[in-house]
Amino acid sequence: MNLEIITKQVVVLSKEVGHFIKQEVSKLINSDIEEKGIHNLVTYVDKQSEKIIVKELHKLLPEAGFIAEEDDSLQKPVDLIGLSIHLMAQQISFMAYHHFLFRLV
Image 1 (cartoon, rainbow, N blue to C red):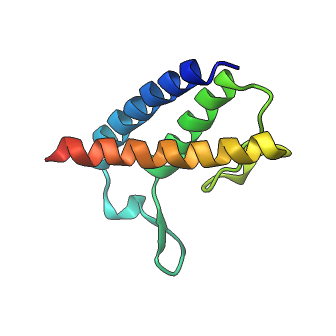
Image 2 (cartoon, rainbow, N blue to C red):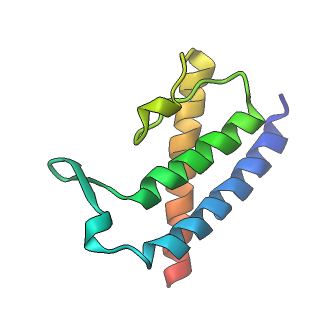
Image 3 (cartoon, rainbow, N blue to C red):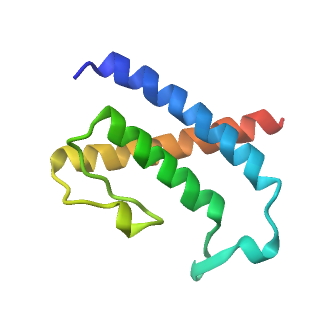
């Protein structure tokens, strides 16, 4: 496992997901927003971006498990590697949104 190569691929992935988010967020309407709980909203953009992240991370590390925030069906049994991948997925999601937000200004 070459962490430098994986890191570069993850940066590319975060930019791709950020681009997806940028495209889709402009299409959102009120009925696209679901309330998971008090002050906890989710849209198809959240769910789809998560699926893309998990799918692409699985290609990079097929032996890893994932903990997905929006879709429990993406999960498989998680070991310590899986927990690290969860944190990586959360970071990619953050990077993607960050990339999207900076592109707005």
